[in-house]
Length: 258
DNA sequence: ATGTCACTCGGAGAGTGA
Image 1: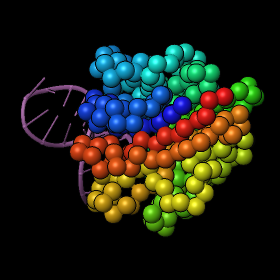
Image 2: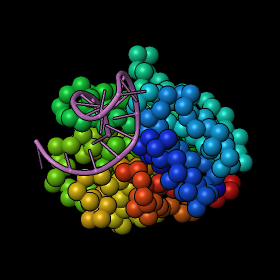
Image 3: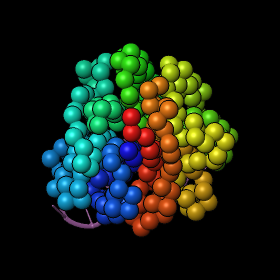
């Protein structure tokens, strides 16, 4: 079973690239972030023609997350991250697919720092940690995946010294991510490739992709049940070089059948 | 600070976010 995550940076602007990538790699499940479209303008019909059913939580202009699957039932179990009834941003979807619980998330960017956007990021992170604790207590196979907007370590950025003041790399943000792992989650990419330089995002600015000036900010966190089933993982980094690409590349894992 | 995209409104291109 192949599961992917892809921050598309605009589902409608990215549709040709998304369809090309789906055909090329044919994942069983796909989590999308940054749809940047209202609920009613999600291109469900075209995606269905490509063989994928889905659930999505749209929002005008910004944010938005979706879970797609091919030949598998998707049962939605959560829409919006619990813990703040006043939070209107579409950043979290949770569903059961093939007996795995999947949380698709788009953690706030948090820049500029300091400021209200960074405060919102840290509050959202705390709510995510609370939900993650609840999920582990379920004692079932669970994946938390998406754009975490966190560079976990110096290994995950081309020039760490340039990112020290950034909301993706501040010590408290890195610590919050480590705290999440400490709960009992496994970072799938690092589990299989502890020492590799692996990036998932390259800025549109200054030919970042051409210079391989990247960041690793899209992650797969696995609950303990799934760790022994992890057989492969990777980044489809070539997709970042395609015409009209997102600034993120798709990331994927493969799980053995139970 | 810079750079480049995608979005909105409104019907061009500035403003916002990343």
